Length: 128
Image (cartoon, rainbow, N blue to C red; front, side, top):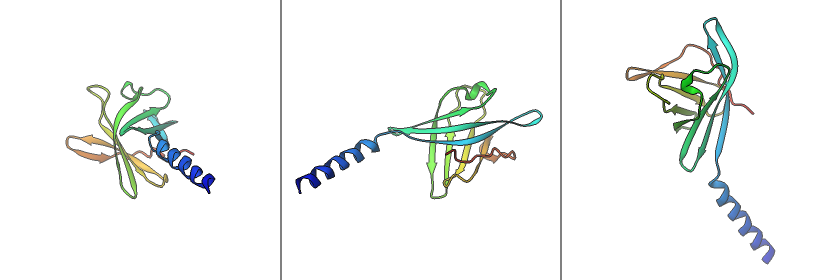
């Protein structure tokens, strides 16, 4: 009986420790250049200690996205919305609206005071 109690305590302790660990997800991300679709890259989100970090990785990234960015994350039952904080002045304000099941999503650009859905397909699917 003591063995079962000790095992339960160990499992409970591990659960508490795990809850403080980082949570990360990655999605495919299709870039575009002047001639059309470019290379496949990825976007990632890591959440740790109440803070969210967004990162974009692809060939020839704009300087606005070449490093990790703080982000705001909003979750509903069906979507995850990631809004990176612009790195510097002059960078477009963008956000990603992703299906919570990983099946797709889209990018939006802030135009004055409203979000406008981008027409390009970014192939935003969860990486496994």
